[in-house]
Amino acid sequence: MSNFEQVRKNVESKLDKIRKGQLEVTELDGQIRKKQQEKVNLMTQGVHGDELRKRHMLIDAEVEELEEKKRKKELETTRQELEIKENMKDDLATLKEERKKKVQEFSAEVEKMNEELFEAKLEYLKKVYDAGQKQVELQEELDGIGAIISKIDEKDRKQHVPKLDTATNRYGKETSGVLPEPNEVVSIEKGQLNPHTVPASTRLYIMTGEVERNNKEAQSKMRKGGK
Image: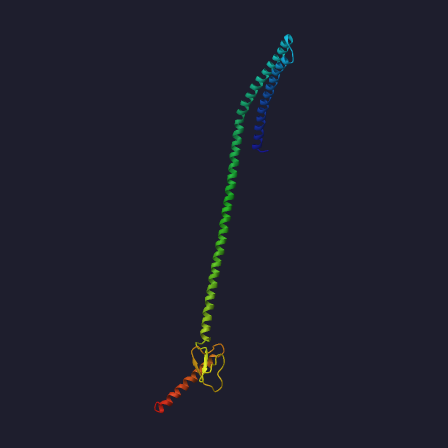
């Protein structure tokens, strides 16, 4: 048993003695009132004369004896109460000191729990921050890769997709999406050649042939006098 528990039991025992003495005084007071009621009852019961006086004297003697016991018990109870309270000063001091100690221990425990909770919160926030940083870095890497892919796609598109996408022959016949017919001169106009079906080499050949034909016609006209 701890010192605190022993002191607590001693205090409770002393307080029980005080309560017991007070209870005995209360019981004696009840007996006195009961005897006094008996005197009143004798007159209502038809007791008179010498018999009534004799009974009253006996009751009065009993009441006086009870009152004396009551006074003694009250004095004894009061003395015990004062004595117990005086003796309890050390016990109460011990209890107060023990209570103070318990409060300090509890406060220290609460403080420790608060510190652990604070550290746990910091650790959680750090993990959230690190996760956010990693997400930002990953997004930047993805954006960089996307930009590189876009540049490659743009370069490839410029290399393989010409500005002319349809063609017409000299008779005005559209040849969009098909190769030129054999021995047929094809003229090139912007927006008239389908780049997805006519290879670049064929388009270059068609354009070169058209230029040479135009040059020959111009030279022929000059030799004929500009006609």
